[in-house]
Image (cartoon, rainbow, N blue to C red; front, side, top):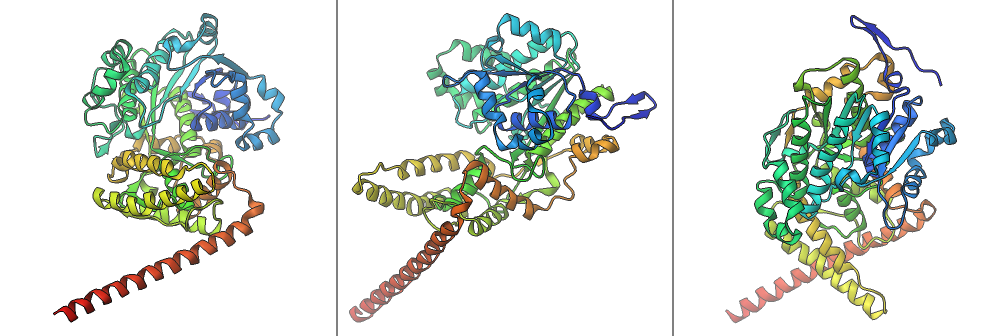
Amino acid sequence: IEMAPGSYADGGFIPNIPQFYSGKNILITGVTGFMGKVLLEKLLRSCPQIGKIYMIIRCKKDKLPEDRLKEVTDLPLFDILKMEQNWSDIEKKFILLNGDVSELNLGLSAEDEQNIIKNVSIVFHVAASVRFDDPLSDAIKMNTRGTREIVQLCLKIKSLKTFLHVSTTYSNCYKSMVEEKVYPPLADWREMIETVEKLDPGIINILTKKYIGSMPNTYTFSKSLAENVVWEHRNQLPVIILRPSIVISSWKDPFPGWLDTINGPTAMLVGGGKGVLRTCLANKDVVADYMPVDVAIRAIITAVWHHCVNRVQDQNKIVYNCSSRDKSVSMQELMRLGLKTAEQFPFSEVLWTPTAHFTTNKTCFAVNAWFKHLIPALIVDLVLKIRNKKPRLVKIQQRIFQAITALSYFTLNHWTFKNENFQNLDAVLLPEDKIDFSIDLSDINIKEYFVNATLGLRQYLLHEDDSKLAETRKQANRLYWLDKILKALGLVLLLWSCQIFFLSSYLNA
């Protein structure tokens, strides 16, 4: 496969991105996660001469690392790559390591550790637990201690060129404006690791609120500490901290709409489209910062190239806020676009016609949730019991209520993320790299993007059968008119009740 030529500058020859990665052996953690999958696919497709790819994958539910990687590469995400390149040749690049980032020494054998130390030159640390409700012990072990362990491994790597740590723009969410710098820690990461290693998890759960302080959850707290782990080693290692905002569906690479995970915005779209989410604790005017996953991955790959070929020494350029600051969309507009698409391409097994109501008042939300979520769920579960089927909707609504409450910190507040370093990544690209690695969002069509995102969610996450779309549309139409009729009957009943009440009051007077 031929590669485009690089460029010459005052400092000599500057390789383009595919040339830079050519022959280099890399290590990726978190390759079975959402961003890890897209990173793997992008490196293989756009940097075809890349060397060996080491991947730390843990066994899960009796599945070996080989089985889990096959599940990843069997996804539609890799279809274009398989059409363009010889898959058997690609598989020869894979070196799977049985390990666990949440374990000491990453759960690696001595032999696997030595293999990494001798051969790897670039490390992408993508692995993380992104659950908001993780026990503090689990979050610290995975996100904070796991980062310490990968840093300690990097200190041993003989020819390390760059270590890139994927964080989140919300790692400092106690600040309304977040700059591209590492902030002073809210706690000592060494002490927190020692605490979770020594204390009983039950005791730590009781003390969690005290430990995390102004942070809304264990995820943001543990990721904040992880940044400080990396930052403290900036003079010993060539480090990069890249903070994506809320990562959602792909914009165009390898194709529009790729998504295989549920997070805040996708959960809202699924819940609204399925008719189980009818009220939400959120400020409709809050502008949420979403980042297409393919743009975040391009930034990751480009940042490593930039730091190496341009020999970036300025420690003010270590942190990148991967934010769509100028191309964000309000909560109300997001839901409007998603539900409009869901009306045109309805989901199957819909409980009720898609709709959603926003409120910033917690009491109002609780009342709405009772009447719009819980009571209908109780009725549906009662019908299921009568038909000798397992009731399930009440439990689903309980989880939805808990999820909305957990997300409310982010749906009720607004942040500004400074992103000059991130934007500069596009400016430093060589002309031949612009097509495959540009992170410029100036020409993104927000409406088209979220339509594709909803369609992708329907296809890749919910696995909807398009052959049944005509029947699904008929069902959605029936629910639409049933909803209108019931609302009209409710209004008539209300007016009739008011008439009876006032007439009775008048006669009594």
